[in-house]
Image (cartoon, rainbow, N blue to C red; front, side):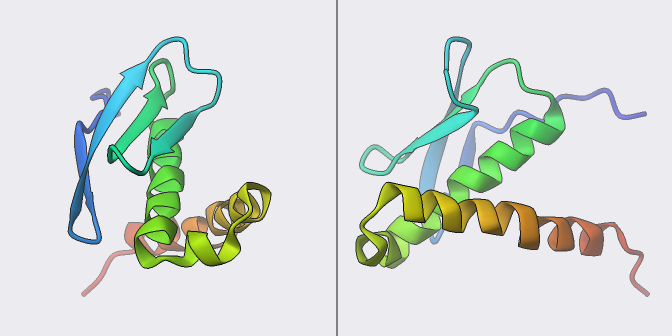
Length: 102
C-alpha cells in the first residue's frame, strides 16, 4: 500500500508553469487564477481527489491557454465541458495508464 502523499507544488501546462497552493478554508475542491498562474486546491483532500482536482483545474488552464475559454465565454458552459472531460475522458486515461505494456 502506498502511503505517500501526492502533493505537487508546480505543474507545467502548455509550456506555462503554474504554482499549486493548498488552502484549508477553500469552499470548492479547487480553483484556477489564470492571470497569476496559480491553482489552489483544498488542503484536506485525499490523493485521488487531489489528483482529480488538479487535472480538472489543469483542463480549465488548457481552455484558457488555447483561447477556447474566450469562445465559450460562459462559466457554466466551461464548467460543464470540464466536468464532461472529468467524467468521460479522465477514467479512460487512468485505465490506460494502469495497463501493462510490452
